[in-house]
Amino acid sequence: MNDGLINFGIYLSYALVAIAALAAFVFPVIYMIQNPAEAKKGLVGVVALVVVLLLGYVFAGSEIPDALAKACKNFDVDPSKFKKIGAGINAFYILAFLAVVSLVASEIRSAFK
Image (cartoon, rainbow, N blue to C red; front, side, top):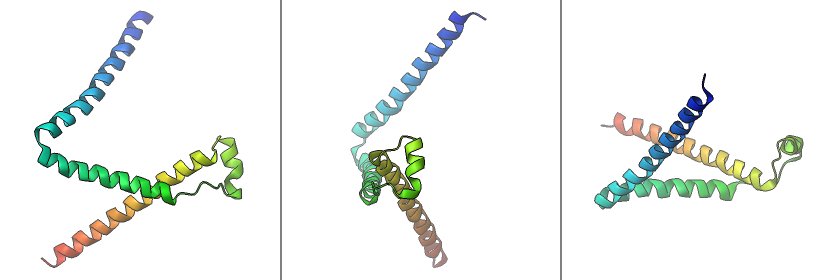
């Protein structure tokens, strides 16, 4: 096949992905400007997610345990990266716990209706 045609297709794909990413960012901003009351509800969710991520980061340790030292060295994980990994795991635990609590609370509430 013609390499020029393949390269053109790849560059066209890059351009379309960039346009889609830009549209995915611009249209919600336009919607938030047009409907500020509903934007507050969405921003509350974003702020809650940022709080969960910050809590995960605060509770993450940066000290690498001896049992993981060799693996961390093999994968070039320093204490800063280890803390970020721990933050992601902690945030997952917090979000999973909140999901389970919300499911149980929803079932209990619907049982009493």
